[in-house]
Length: 353
Image (cartoon, rainbow, N blue to C red; front, side):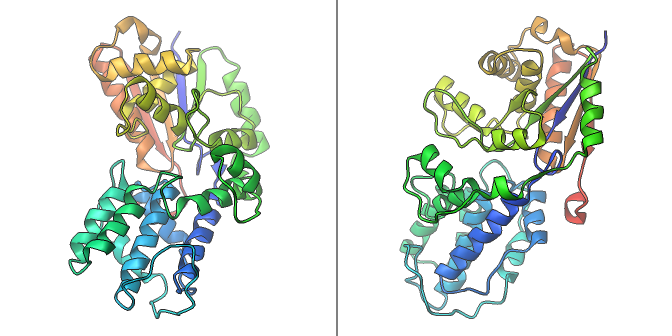
């Protein structure tokens, strides 16, 4: 029997991620206000441009915005830092156009946009002194480290809410706020669409899973917030196999002792691992088989279930499409015949392009 597989992205496909976007805009405004530039804001089309460039993690885009603001402010006051103090001096910056200048000239990004931004900003501003470069390094190289980043703690408290922030990170919250994911994220599928998909899944040859770069819970004390779990509860598909950032990071660090490897889409391991989970494998066994296949050491017998099938991917950025296409190429090398069907889903003209 020929099987059909659907890999869904979450944000922008199954879930309208207004909470993430509102949290990012709020965090940029908080940083701008603390730096004495209260008129700076981040527009929706700029968020779309970040995502179109594969900068889809708000931890990265927030840090990049903070770094760009600092560089402009340093032209007037070279000693300003994000040190928790609010600077009452109002610097005359031109709206949010400094973000446009950066976004209009950079290429599509790899797995670590913060590190790329550091090299790019320092190259474009050779007048930065060693202390300023060191501070930008702190912001951009640690933008995903909750315990080192100057920008991430406040942002994650806005995203998760103060109570879940404390529970997740064992850090004392400062904002006394509710989580914007709970307040502003909404399902995209209508109740009718939801029921149609359920009926499709009730047919034994059909399978679906969720491939998301959202943070997700992970075992063995690996600290990762349950943002993907919040999402699947909101869309009422908590029973679908879901592979998120927390599990993939845990696998790289605990099983491969590699803290630099990113297996998140567009890496093929993200799609391959989820496909194994859709057939009932535990996430550890699924990732072991996916990792072996990526290395060229996969067993054909582990992947025969895919032979002759079509793998559909619904995505609002290129990452998941690339992950699936690469996964299918790996399968073809194992003489497993699979065909990718790559579907881009977005109303935004920047992301459509």
